[in-house]
Image (tube, rainbow, N blue to C red; front, side, top):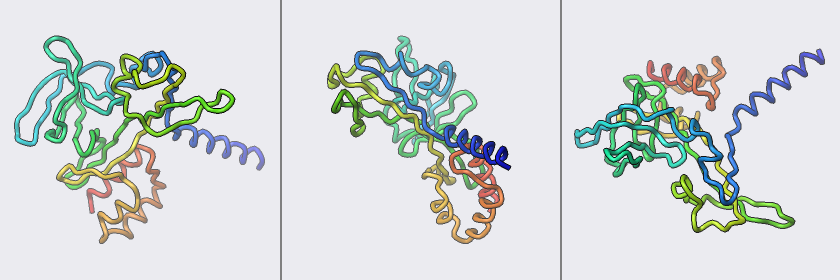
Length: 227
């Protein structure tokens, strides 16, 4: 009995650890790319052939990738420079390789798509400045929004004694047929389908749906699309 309890506690601990967002600490004077692995910065290991569709119907092909650090889709211009797409509010859809991205107050990568319901994920980093505290300790302050500058060099706004803390966050969002996405929380979904509330609650309970696991969110979206 004790052994079984211990195993359960260990498994629970592993599950909790797995759900913790990744955190990277960038010391003063060190470039972000020296600390954060390239596979964490970019969605894809290399820039892939893609296509951007704008709301006015126009399109533009190019080599594309999603930069999680600055939460922007980037492309390689004819000179070989890496630039971010401008006028994001005018973008309807971006296809990169076999993946589809929508712009809905930020980029959302589609995980599943039905006729009525889509499920997507948004991976981005939040940044905090660590200021020296008492006895050499540091304390986090509010987000600095200097991360784009820090990709290649330390910002001139940062003191040499300050370090940067980057926290990787993954959020799941549910979208409608108009590609408008909102955070996929249980209460939000129930409000979206008021007439199917009992069925949704039963499905979530029976399938032990976790709102922090991509495979569960995909499963839930496919069910919602049948309502």
